[in-house]
Image (cartoon, one colour):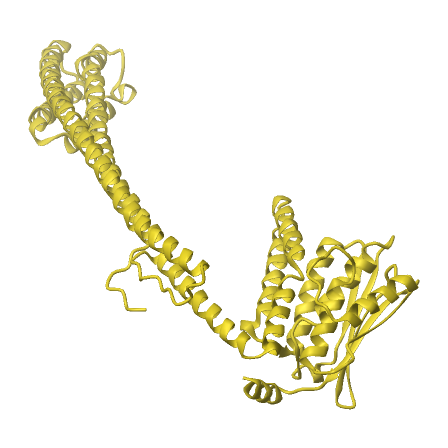
Length: 488
């Protein structure tokens, strides 16, 4: 297929649209919140300064003159009055208010601070008079000056509070304007966002609908048998992958049909591959049910183990289309299968696998052991009260690989065993699970066909359980590749 100059993903388009909408809607809201928080902070600071200034007025206008009079009249001494501590506290508070106030409101505070120095000088004069024991009349004159200076400081603080009130009023007007402007902008943005959404939805729908229509028409022609039909490329990523897969499917169907027509033997093998794929659909359903059940029960580790085992099971089942796999892979395959089944039937199922590592590199026809293990579980262990054990064994014997699957299940009656052997003799692949042993019949036929031998499975059964075994030539990877190149 030709290289696309532009590629679109449905998910990418939806993400782009959502990001644009979020940006358009959230950014103004964030700006509004920042502005409101800014003005709220200014309001709070302004009110706090005014409340502090109002408290200072009481101290300056009433408490300090009264304390000075108590000192002059002899009711209190300087150390007892703590008048200097009051003056210091007032000065520090005015300095703090001045530092945080706006530039336009500082003048009254600066004048008040300087006037406080004058007030402190008069207090010093009272202290000196008291130490010199001058007549009270002279100190009373100083008290009048203290009251006058205190009133002046009070008026300066009043001027500051008034200027703060004016500033706060102007700030309130500015805030209302900002809120109104922001509301208008946000309304316009919502309108634009709705327009962008409608336009983007229509564009996305069109970009998806047209390729789907082309895909549907081409798929219909392929279904009618036109395997040469090819679907044109699309810019939508998800549909492009689907288009590629459909085209690949058509190519592979065409190739399989040509190959099947070359000789009847290849056709028979292809039919058996289809039968092989139909052996275990119920296993997938049951395993997925078990995974869902474990997930609902909150058993995370069990879900991970089951999912990993199921992934390995089907990965080896597929094996990239290969018919032959190493014995080590076949062993891993049945081990994953048994792990999954033991999770489901942990109270009734035990198993053991005895296959030496030294034969792990030899190749075997894929999926010979797993159907035997499945048959042992469902037609032996599962139907026996108390369950049992499945043992899988393999060995190398005189250039042949010998495998056996033994279960301690219910076993078969002589009539059942005779009927199963008759079905295997007929050599017809079984695709229905209506009766027991359908997997055994298929495995027996595949062994005879692929290994070109008359003997397939050997079955012994009785009250103690069932043993299914087979014997096949030992083959290496080089021999497998050589045989496939000759048959191809």
